[in-house]
Image (cartoon, rainbow, N blue to C red; front, side, top):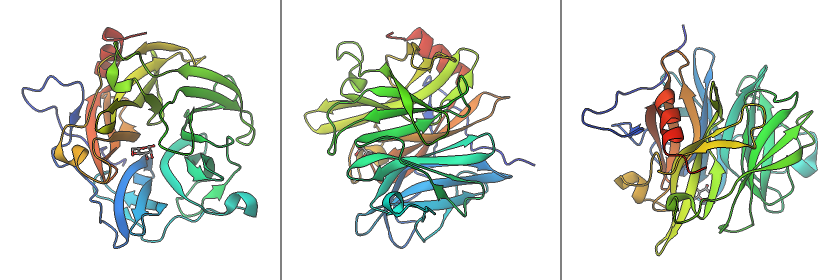
Length: 323
Ligand code: BMA
């Protein structure tokens, strides 16, 4: 039997579209003897339970990926050894750094995308069937790029991915783009999806934006949860909201939420290595009930969970749309 995804009902008296798990954070920073922080991580259903690829920065403050398994999606058993990709090509396979993974099941295997150090950050791609052996493919793009997020099926006969061209630093800008590939090797047909919002319309997303979890196919289009950044006098502030993309031409934005779904408000989101960051990288959902659980990095330090109902998030996105 399939394991139940994590869930907790909306608190009484709450009118929030998404709400936090009362036992957040679910993954402490020091779960591993060598981890400084565990955040911005990706989980998927796997067999009868769950598996994931986790961003674990070590106590040298090196950015590493680790594999983990869980029976309930909440309590995680993360391997102490960092993930090592299998790659025939030394030029590509040489590890420099890796962070902010996403995991996407397409057809018969799990694809991992991550921010991969190759003369600056770009999008690394690998696949696995068993979460033991991971086979690294070519980097999808030339540097600099971050937030590579695949779609869970081919669109118009090609694999599809969102990404966010950037720079080699703490990028002050950032639009979401769409790209296609016939073979997971060559990526092209790059299309613009969306820019940061106008400050007067929706300030939480006015500096830069980037796709978060794998988009979810719905009758209204692809539901994309994404992060948005505001630059305050105290630095960047990362929140997340939702958009609905056209089902056949996902670079066309149908709706986009004006208000955020979650912004840094709790202690563990506001205090940590990088204060004021809510950074979603994965979600689990149940088709039958519409329940969704979003995994997000908190203050670049720990991992939290937020819950909602997909139909309510769609209704919210349409009702508050700034498109
Ligand atoms: C981005 C990435 C994320 C991080 C965020 C806030 O540029 O590095 O991993 O969560 O900054 O520091």
